[in-house]
Image (cartoon, rainbow, N blue to C red; front, side, top):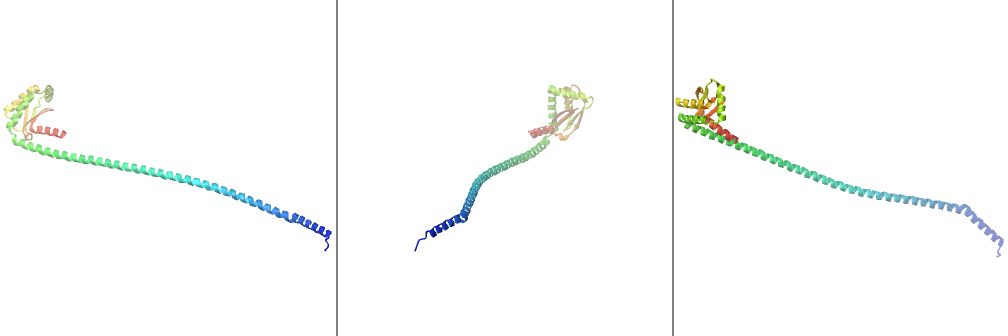
Length: 249
């Protein structure tokens, strides 16, 4: 078999032409497509990485916000618990104060009620005591006792202080010719009437007319009215005087 160089050269030329054609019309477009595809893949990967980074940043931001919200919620919960505890303590203090005030008011009311009751009992006991004393004095009262009280009155008139004597004389001048009103628990004899007349004249500075009337309520003794000036010398007024002192004390 002979080797034909012409055929060999032509086959080589055909092969080179085929390579050029393949490279020009097939290989280069395929490379361009592959490059474009690779570039698109890189762009998509870059976009995906960017999205992944953004997602990671958003996740980190969400975690930070969630932690911040959790911390803020815990602070608000603690603040709420403190406020509730303070309000509870304040409410309990107000309740305790109110109970204390009510207890104090109740004690005051009870003390006032007790004091009023005791005062009423004391008043009733005093009333009963004065009634008993008055009853006893009525049993002891007699014209003789009245006469003795009149003698004491005359002695007291002679020893009146200057101020009281001046008041008596002023009252005597005001009544002019009017009679002195004398209430007596028992009838007065002439001697007792003369003693009273002399005692009043000495104390008042002039003689006075006497108008004597009975008043058994005085128990014993007399009550003399020289105008607006009253002279008490009887058991009824004395009992009333001591009774008023006891009530005031």
